[in-house]
Length: 226
Length: 226
Image (cartoon, rainbow over the protein chains, first blue to last red):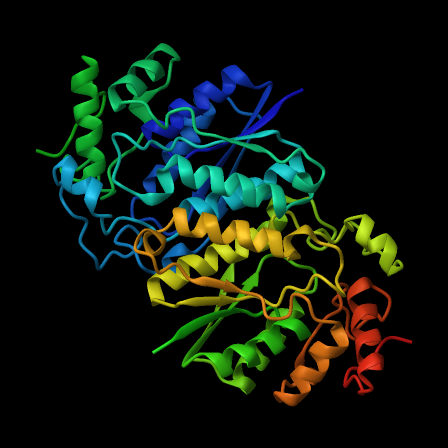
């Protein structure tokens, strides 16, 4: 029986990734992090998404990345920047970058995979319509896979979990179409970095999402701030 | 000014590594994890060691690796095995292995290094007189370094922290001699996996330590269970 772990943030990409993992695995486990993100409401959304799509187990792990600092996404005294054009984004890593986040999250998922005997870890990383974070690039995942194979019991025994990033080269519009086909409850997802009552419609994450729905020719079920 | 982070568990190796880092850096930051280890008293020892040797800041980060399972070191219902001979240890990873632990710890240290602007991360890993854990091998650190360079802002900017493991090929006796020369307070260190009132003297970690002191011709300041 194939078991997989999905890193589920509560956003659109990870929800779609969960739906894909469900197609490809017999048993799916979801892992969400309460890491001091200011948009912590995504954690509640992750719970609702896991409930709706159905998983064998959903674990929420607390880790105080905010205590380590270095990001506007975990420090309420730092402003969240409004969206810049995509060319700028590609050249400059924004202040919403969280130091080594995907390394920390994947490492914890890898730990869980060894305890569960899970053969795959899914992450909804995207290196196309994204905020320019270095830990969303394919080269990073390849290097992480190598570290996982050398630094774990499962690696020594030649069955380290495979890191899968099925969305990595997709356009946001295509991710939304794919998620729609798979019945992803986009009304439950949360993308906004600001984490207010309703999404701000101005940060990178909101703008990339809004543009994606427009290009997909689909309605975003969320209402944005005026 | 050079800044370094030291992963400080409270054991003999990490305490010696802290003393080495202090010689090689202008400012040293210590990072300890309260990860659900049954020998949690090592966290208190780490505090005392950091106090005595002196660090710019000592951070204790909580992360529930016990919630992820897979180790006798984080599960009080699993027995801690007694010491086996070294040849067996090299061939078989013991049940005290904690899944992906050094990956998780280094990833968090890397996150902190980006916020601090620290150029080095020290870890007291040893691949000679050790429990046979895969995440203590040089090849793993090399692979981790690569992942760090590809998956972080500091890596993109060509100043990712360098992972340093000054003890990796040393015999335990030589680590003890080195620590003694550097004034490491070995009476404050804690090695025993069982985490009782006094060290058990029977687990891998106690036995490797005891043998090291004997071979170094020095007295271990700790008293062991009868």
